[in-house]
Length: 475
Ligand code: SAH
Ligand code: SF4
Ligand code: F3S
Image (cartoon, rainbow, N blue to C red):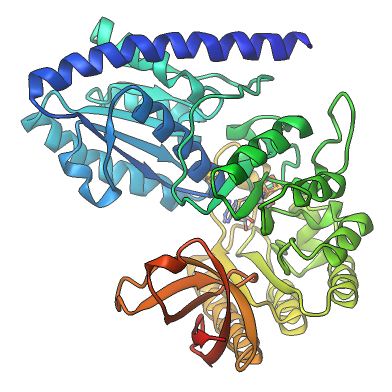
């Protein structure tokens, strides 16, 4: 066992000790209140944060809290915001809600409030909370979420604001409790952090350097999930294509995928996110031959202009990206492609923007997330001259969205009349005679069914394409 692994194991044991301590405190508080204490975790941001929130949920449940849904936040005894800072409006949302929480706490001083996640890795943010949001009880970051038991203990014992942020970490702490939001599908972290430093992006600064988990730990986790009834796995990393390169025994992402597919009981495997610069032929081959891997690839484009891509530090060109798409479609003809696009990167000209439109026109994405460029302090792009005026961005954004929607509707129509497997997720909230589930390409399908189908993969005929979802019937 390496030094780092040994320290990680010791850390897990330490946190279990704190959990036992906190459990006693929470039990006493529940006794006084005459009911079980409740906690509510509000998650902002991406799948990484969603998975982290499942870990927080696992810990809180273990120490004796009942977990209540986000829409009942105001009645909780403990509220945690797991924050995102990828774009400025993600930050603004948190400050807006914090103001409201301050008022609730005035009338209910025993309410506990914790902030964690990516925003907390920014020193300015923490300073602002220290100064202007003194009512916040606990603040921690992305590198030490496993310390929640210890921080809770400190807060209860010392009765003061507890702030603990780490700049970075080499630790991957395994084997702490985690709870799944869905019984039949789960995200699994395969790596943490990012080394790519795309010039607009704050993620490498708030999530630290790239660290891969060992394949045996990942497989063991997936085997446990499968034994527990999970059918679909989403492997998570900021750039899964560079997985495993820095491990003591290097292994490629494609090899890991093959191992994951061997786990009995797992029927579907997805992954997020693939950086085009590192997408290998080996991966395409493994995707093509392995029926468990969903016929879907999220391949962020960001911009269609090779000049802008260079400024973004993305390490591919428009032509390179299009070649990759051709290669993918040749190997996997019915693959669904989705993407992320940023509009209004500093210096983006009308010509650059038209290159982006051209890629959307040619690739015909099944769907695309479109974002207005947001200046993130500390990133190289924030210092670039020629930031684009708002009205120009807005006009480009509207044109792009229109084209993206046109293509998505067209793609959506192409599947009409086909019969495809659907993993059923829920009873339809609007019409309880229907159930809702997802195709391999992640599109939603609603069809007549009952609760017994939840968590099952069933064949469904897609009778009517409705733009972003389908109405179907059991085949
Ligand atoms: N690791 C993933 C993306 C994570 S962030 C990848 O490389 O694809 C998700 C998306 O947010 C990015 O793909 C990008 O399109 C968008 N994004 C990141 N920083 C942004 C910024 N400063 N302004 C606008 N959008 C941004
Ligand atoms: Fe951000 Fe680029 Fe890393 Fe994705 S690959 S998280 S866009 S720096
Ligand atoms: Fe946001 Fe952090 Fe994810 S900044 S997008 S929650 S990695």
